[in-house]
Amino acid sequence: MKNFNLYDPTNKKHKEILQEEIQRAYKLLVEYNESKIWKIMPKSLRVIALSSFDDDKGPDAADEYADVDDWMKIPDMITNSINLSLYDTTNLDDGMFIEWLQNNSTKLPKDKWYKPDYGIAKNTSELIQYLYDANPYPRSITIREAIGQLMQLGFIVPLEQLAKKQTTVKRSDDGGFNFRPDDSMLKSQNKFRGGYWTGD
Image (cartoon, rainbow, N blue to C red; front, side, top):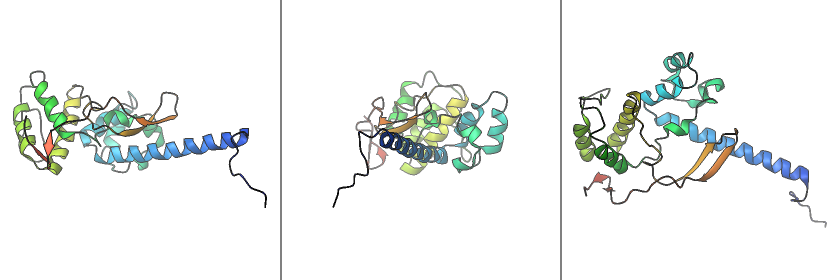
């Protein structure tokens, strides 16, 4: 019986089909990754992201879609113009963020800038102490909310540097997709043990 090859690397048409399938797979991975990023983004970050898509229509988009949890239900005209990787908090290292707060405390607002939906407003020192003592789940939520509020105040939070090393799928400048390990992400060492801050 004659062997039948599904893929012939010397066949130009086969190579074109393979490239199309790879691009399709990348697109699905990116869409999945974007949905995951969006779902855990606090409203403050969503507002910033939506407002960035258009100078005139951005604020209206923020009003309409900031509370929509399903990224895929937001119109493509909006989602295709937003690079959600700029707001990716899915793999944040809590310890590295607390360390960043400590190192930049003199540059951050002096007042009680962190204002949770429920609870007491906090200044930077109070927020750091709260994060030291908090359990992992509320700590992660608080950190994301704090990042969103800092960005709304005009501060740049280096999310990639505060993330655990991981493999990422991102949109490239030419509209394609990149699937690669992100070497710029730094790995935290000895920050938390068992989910709690241990100190230096």
